[in-house]
Length: 92
Image (cartoon, rainbow, N blue to C red):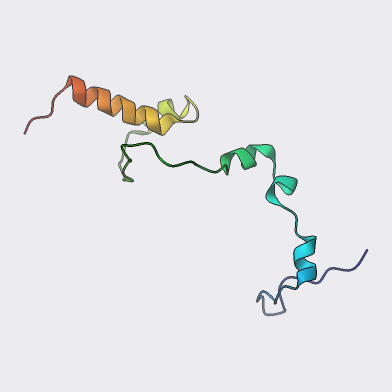
């Protein structure tokens, strides 16, 4: 087995990679656990209406309850808020 060269030099800079280096690389599915591959899966186009990224502070117990329901918990928070505003019209 041929000794591999370090990918960085003494200064910690990444050295120029050769075609031999690339031949040694393995694809993500070959080395990562299946659970991580699933999380890194490719997302399709978002369904409309498109959602807006925001930051909101919620009580820890509320977040904990929703997270305990598993994947998709953020969509369930969105659905709960949507149901609330439909049932309780907001007036100023």
